[in-house]
Amino acid sequence: MKKIVYLCGLMLLSMNMMAQIDLNDRNWDTVFFDDFTEMDRHWDESWLSNPVNTWMAFPGFDVIDGWGWYQVYQYANNLFCPAEGEMKLVGEYCDTLWKNNYPLPGFMGGVYPSPDSLFYFSGYIESYKDSIDNDLKFQYGYFEIRCKLPKHEGAHSGFWLQNANPNPPDTFYEEIDIVEYSWSAGDSEADWLVVTNPNATEAGDPRFYSTAISQNLHGQYVNPYTDVYSMVYPHIPNNHEDVSGWHTYSCEWMPDHVYLYLDGELVSSFYDKTHIPRHPLTLKTNYGIDGYGVIPITDGNNNVIGYDPGWMGTDTLTIDFIRVYQLDWDCGNDEVITCQNDLNSFIVHPSVKNSISLAPINGTITIGNMDKVTFRVANTFEITSPFQANSGCEFTVIRQDCPE
Image (tube, rainbow, N blue to C red; front, side, top):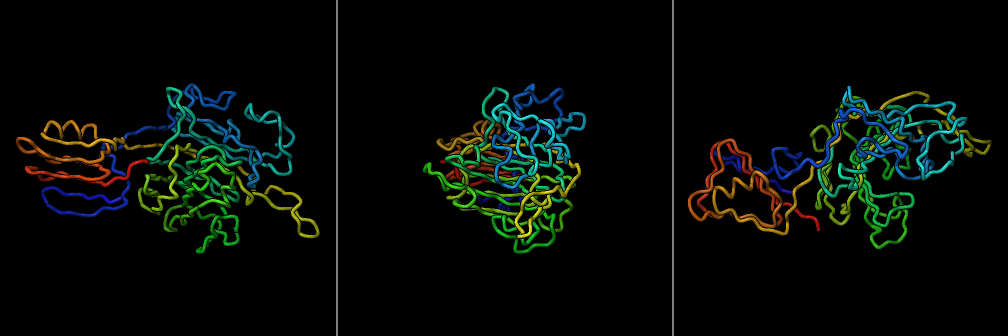
């Protein structure tokens, strides 16, 4: 995507590529925002947040999913804290987990996994329903979370977009990992990673990566983590503060690119349109605990026969807010602005058009002092004089790929 900015009055043309979205650009609409200040929210027996079913507290697949996780997700470990304006996902070691029944969502029945592989309770939330009970899924947009991540052996937290169920995979399985922290990401021997980190520093480094999976578009069964396309993005730069402090992790997902940001700074970009997800996805965040939180028990032949807990603490993934912005798409139409009133009306409620023409019939079309105007077009933008851009304004034209 190329952003062309005319700094009006100075008549300076500059190229500003891959910038974090400008919230003064009215083409963006806030379609989801939760700062966790709403009072009286709680979890019901269907694992949905009430009084509004914004979130579901379980990922929807088996407690033991074959991925080497050692936690059981519980709605009680997702704490609404409106006084602080926070959602807290609490991971905790439980030395009596195997002795007690624990809540499972209704479709899981009464199957409780064996005690030799589970040591922790933890939290997970995914977008579920909006205020009028529509599925809360998103197709393209800008996604951000401000949070503090847990950092200990086995901590494996993430904020990502995914459709359906990876085990077994959905027919159109796709995923974008906006941020994924893994204690093992700095371990050069961690061969389970999609690509081993070539610049390993120390265990506990966070990993930023985006995985776009879109090969199984014809309905055949595939293993989404071995038989399909994936792209791993690099570590967060080491000069950033510890991930246990507040940071904002964000992603711009468009038909032609994926940009990843840390605290407003671009850290990675991806342009292969054939592997960019193009179906509606669910927004998710979790506090996972993987094999680095446990100690393998081996027999005389060095075969793993069980596990003991290694990490035996309590920690929290604390969320300040989660936001989603989407463009107002109107790619099937052209906009012809013939007078000042046309321009004034359009910039109040702009949208992405096939083309935009500034073609005054009588008089001059003017962008006023200090105005910020952004036009987004799929194909062409044209100015037919007379046109005036006053000193101090910012006039931006963005060529924007539209959804197919």
